[in-house]
Structure formats: C-alpha cells, structure tokens
Length: 216
Length: 216
DNA sequence: TAGATTGTTAATCGATTAACAATC
DNA sequence: TAGATTGTTAATCGATTAACAATC
Image 1 (tube, rainbow over the protein chains, first blue to last red):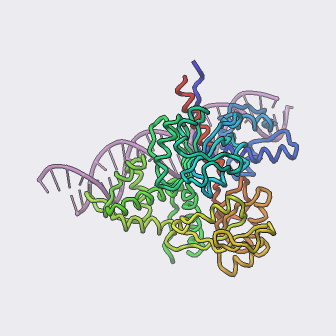
Image 2 (cartoon, protein in one colour):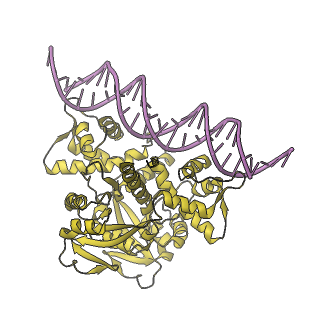
Image 3 (cartoon, rainbow over the protein chains, first blue to last red):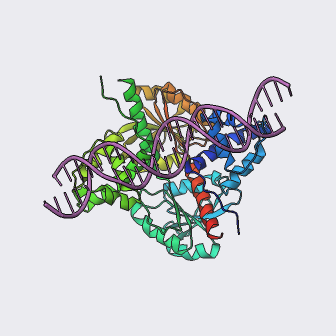
C-alpha cells in the first residue's frame, strides 16, 4: 500500500509558486538559507501561513536557522510535480494558444508541449513555436499513443465541450481551461479554470470599492 | 455622505462572471427567468451559495419564480463595474500582450484598451490590434492626460517593477499583473495577480493527488 | 545560556452549507 | 391552499492567525 497523498488546500497551491520565485532570486544572490519570516515579508503574508504552506511539502527546517534554499526549491517543485516534466497538448492555436506555446517558462512549471491542435485547415501541418499543429481528429489517438495526460484548451467557446470529449477519449486526465465556458467532465477528470474574467472581476470590483471608500 | 460599498468576498467575485456566462446562454434561448438552483446545477455549486453571491448585487427575486435574467445580468455587471467601460493601458506587447489586445471579449468585461507601451524601438509607432504602441517614457503623462486608471503588465520579469512605478506616477490605481514577480505598491493601489503558474500549480498537484489515490 | 526560529496546538475569522421561515 | 423558491439565520467547515513549546 502506498502512502496517501494529503490534499493540499488550493490557496496554498497558489502561493507555492510565488515562494519559488522568491527562492530563485535568493539563489541568484547566492543565499543558502531562508526563513519563513523573510518569505512572508517579501510577499506580504503571515509567517505562520508561510510555515504551514511549506510544511505541506514535507521539508523540515532548523530552529534558529531556517530552511536550505536549494532543498526548499526542490521540495516545492516536487510537491507540485514540477520536477518531472509532464507532456501536454494544447488545442486552439489562436493568439492566446500561440502565446502559451511561446512561453518558455512552462518548462519551469513542469509542463512540456508536444503537440498542438486546431480546426483551421490553414494552420494544420504548420509549426508554432517549433510545435506541430495537427487536426483535432487526431487528438485522441495521439494522446493514447504518446501517453499525454494534460490538455490545455484555448478554442472558441462553442468548440470547448467537443474538444473536452476528445481529450477524455484520449485518456487525458487534467484539463487547463482558458475558455469562458463551464466544461462538463466525469469526476475522474481534473479541470482547472484559468479564464481571464475571474481575476479581472476581482480587479474591477476591488478597485471600485477602494476608490469609493476614499470619496465617502 | 455616500453609501458604503460592502466588500465582496473574492471567491464570490470569481464566480459572478461564470453566472454571467450561463445567463447569456439563457438569453440566447429566450429564457426570461432563472432560479438559483438552476445556476447551481449547471456550475456544480450549492444553491445557497449562488443565492448568497447574487444577494451581493442587491437584486431581489420572487419566491416560487426566481430572478429576471436581464435584471440579474445587469446587476452582476454593475456590481463588477462592467457596465461602464474603463479605459486601460497595457505595457509589454510580446505574445501575451498581443493576445490580450486581440481578445475582443474584454469589452464585455468592462475594460477598453486605449494605448499600448513597449521598450522595443521596433514596436513603437506601430499598431497592434488597432492600438498604438508608445514608448514607456510616455506612459505617466498619457495616463494623467487620458485619465486612465487601469494598467495591465505583460513585460519581462525584471522590467515589471519599473513599469509599476511609472503607472503609479501616472495615477493608475488598478494593476493587473501577469508577470511572475511580486510587485511593490503603496496601499492605495490595487494589484490583482494573474500569473499562469497559480492555476497551473493547482492543476498539476490536484492531478497528481487524483491519480495517486486511484493507485493506492 | 539566551535568543531566534521552527513546529504545533489553540483561537479566530470567513466562507460554505444546512435549516427554516417568509412569500408568491 | 399547497408547493416551490427566495431570504435569512444558524451550524459547519476550512483557512488564517495567534500563542507557545521545542530546539538549535
């Protein structure tokens, strides 16, 4: 029997990459050790929260000293499964899809695009950022063959559900959805929504609240 | 004295645009009325939660009937300040910046790009998706002149803080930050982070937890 | 030894969910 | 009138923060 993986709270998962960022800057400055308080200060968080988050990765620190930067980087990346590069597909090579394919950093974040798909005849057969574009009809078969388990969706809204079915048919288990449309999936599939409007709604409302409170 | 705007919980703000999406599909189907239960079912949420969220907008429904679709759309958009289109700047016309400028839907989400900025001489003076690209040195002055209060940052990480200062100098109050770097701002500025790695971390970890639990 | 930081338990806070009364 | 849905209060749950003991 394998050890059970404890579910990490989502807010913690969203913060862990921010810690990573800071840790990389420390590494550049050749700092070997970091304390939870220094992380908390830089990111404007509570130090207990940082410690709780870090604890999720299983690392242990040294009282009075802190954590070893290299080890903490390794542990966070391991926790997020970013140490093993996962192959991924992307469907929809419009401007957003193209931008994502061109974003070198994703290799840092544990995913590696191995193929792109599109419905547009003119795009099929071409390369985008060095990645071949295939027709969506090939997706399921290729996903099985290449054992790809992560799919990114950046198609127009009315094509998103159809693409989702194809992905599931091909054995894809994790879907990163940029389309402003709720996907219907069986419960063994993980969907993470990354629509722009989520954070934009927070921005526009919080801004309004702030400006309003000043004019009271 | 003006009525105080009650702070809306962030999770609520992230859900409201999802409700909007569903409401638009109802409108297309010519449905006039919607219940909180039907919204909850479509989005996989609890109906009390939906009612609580909706309540934030100040709308009142009719027992046994529900809410008027058109009115609910209006109220949600008003709550998010999406009925008045806010002018915005974007700094960094790389592939992500270009994708954002080309995304027609932002007009639906209450923001309207009026100018773009970049450090690259070759881009300055050109147009991207019909929007002029200016040097960053012009940003502050133009922001004041045009009374722009929202800025989007899509520059390389090491330029982000400098751009932030320019924005603040120009009177920008709300910053939508796509750069994987923590911005330092005075407390009268609203920063909303929209880094890819936040939701990607959730995806890769949750996927790992799910697959792991199946192999136990 | 004294002091700083981790690790952990307890308290607080906020968001979600359950229960139910009001109303059409 | 009966039943369905809103509106609201109470209970639960989970995440954040505070307090403090353990440890180097």
